[in-house]
Image (cartoon, rainbow, N blue to C red):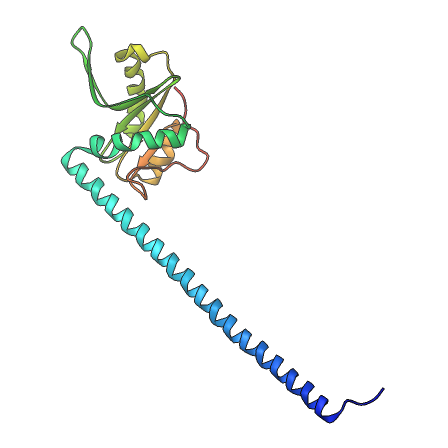
Length: 203
């Protein structure tokens, strides 16, 4: 096989050098692009986390203010119930009531913080500034009282919902064992604090 002419051989060498420089330049630019993308992703994560922390802090302050003013039901629970109920049960509740006082003919009166009604379910809320285990137990009695004081809805199964600005893990665990949904301040003004997959008991 004939050897390449000197000029042709030199051309091949130059072409190989050009390809090597091109590959090297592409590698450098790729690394720059990769590092830029990685930095942008890290900055975006930090930005999202900062926003999330600010939103949590704002919600916490709102919860503290509502607690001090005694308007937690009106300011936190009532506006949040439609979203929470839709997310939890996958259905819209036709009627939601807050601060309901019911008086029986004998003069006995009972106040319910909030409750919601749909075609086949009732949801009864008890809101506490500080949620304790005793409040969990009292919700059982409130469910029984709800059937007595609101007899038009006595045929419906009832789910219990406890709401509070923040909840201690031990109380949350106890409420779960009793079958109750627990709401507290978080990324949302009020969000469900039960473990993933928790299904509220129907009383």
